[in-house]
Length: 292
Length: 292
Image (cartoon, rainbow over all chains, first blue to last red; front, side):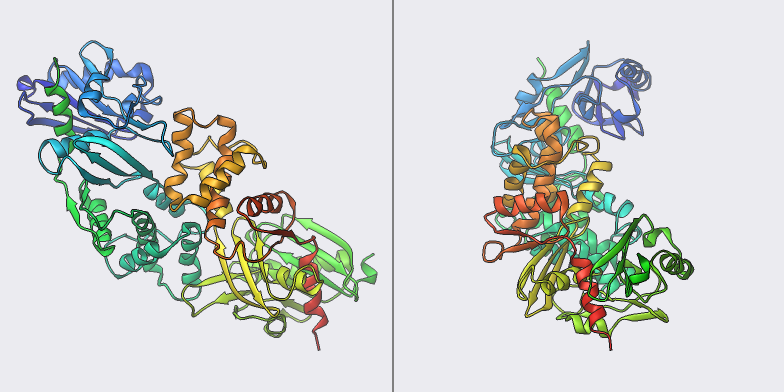
């Protein structure tokens, strides 16, 4: 199949890499999902990784996004400052070797607070490009570091990174709550109760302790602890979005986590819109289409 | 010296144990500070531990407070519900063996939110007992699990556990901020800036990520990261106390941490009052003095 590919699109993250053989029209012809994230690679390992992808998909140009362009990746592709357009990203691509382009991330450099992202921006541009979201919209990309992203007329104007997923993973593995949060997190009574508690919480470091005290005082059942704690974290995250009820929240990434966030947005009185999968390749294809 | 002791007071925590030979009048005659906390001991090890303390201080009655009375300690001493008086605690003491009493903790069982404590309550009663704080006051006991404690006419009526210290320790050791927070935390420009940022933060899981993005974008120097992050955590904690400017905050525990909190309370416009060391033994002595 690789013979028909026009180029190779790579979503190169911290722990995983997804690579796709892309047609000239932007169709995904073939794909690979591997545990070959940047943390598993040294900077000098990338030429061989590119050669392996070309052996699989054909000797085509490569466009890569994500942490591959960070100081822990291949080469550091300097951030484009917000407001950032797709054209600005395309223009700022790094070319570590001929026919390989690394798309930079976006930074809030000089505003009231600093923030950075690498990889989520391409999904936003992809979603807008395929019409899954309007050009002026609010996006949410749940994950280890949840991103809230605002666009105006197709440019990323503001965004906020929230360590919601990392908080949950850390508290499940370490500290006073370790061993209490091993249950499955599903949408249900406990998760919804957690969302409401989190929405009302002004102090996450206090509210999370209620998981322990609630268990000790039999106000919480052991199997409720994980979904309740997850709900607190997601609810606290949503609770700080003053604009949650004013416009739809376009949820990126799909899967279980996006579905949980959609439930939470609904519980908070907002309007969740699930963006179909494929935003990353759509965004990379938009970069490809802008080439000279 | 042990020969003059009337009883032995023990502050038995999670990781450490402090034991004191006490005179009938409440003076500390001798003391030991050891890494013999409850996590280092199985439940059947306590009789031998008591024997060792008596070998050192004399064959005297023992009064112990703290995690020794938890389900991870010797025997579980059921919580006294708030509002809790010193007399109620004394009455509810557990006697696992003759001449050894374990003072229970305090619980918020049926209110809007659950909470528990074991050990801090005795410091509050001690501070009030020696006149270091009025009978109606707001207390703060900084630590792994910071406690805000309110008293009315000498009874503990409300309290909040905030995992401020645990958050800092976890983020220093694990996750995206690991390796960035190893510097010393001192009161200074970065700590004060963190306090102001934390006071204004509505979302701790977002604001803490600014440590990483601030470093990446050269808005924060590496040596500022630890005091700035600590300031964010303490500031966010203080920022949720609506009563901070209405009455003094009596800081328990002393040392570097209480001094940092005193600086933070001042930065937030509050009135910090340092409670001199010795509240724990003063509180245990008040229990001793109430015996039949």
